[in-house]
Length: 133
Ligand SMILES: [Zn+2]
Image (tube, rainbow, N blue to C red; front, side, top):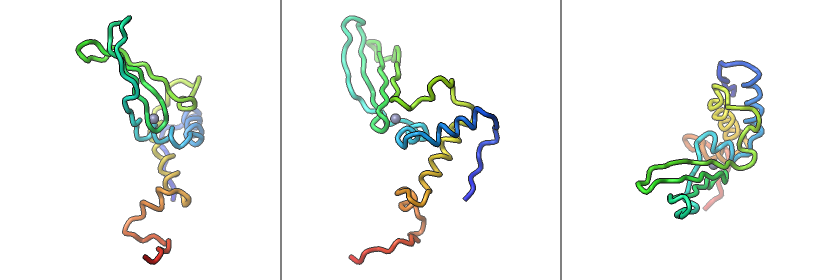
């Protein structure tokens, strides 16, 4: 099956395709479908007089430290991405990057050896033989 790549061309997109192809599965999942943030640590910063909490992604391990005022409004959020999540030294992702990441995820999910590809067969037409119950 052939996939259509975004129409934007250029070395930056090709470099991003290469980056996407080499991403660890957990990083690709988070870049494609967003992080699964969970509360990891919560407290009161006596020196700064503010509430803070650390949210951690259960998939890739990236963290975000949020600082909130007494009314619950977020004053700052400081991300700490897991090593390998970002494209170091290459600036922002180019236009079309999200589509590239999505297609990379589809390609991996639909490869013959992918567990997702075997689960996603429509109409139950799997060629795998079932064990007798
Ligand atoms: Zn994540």
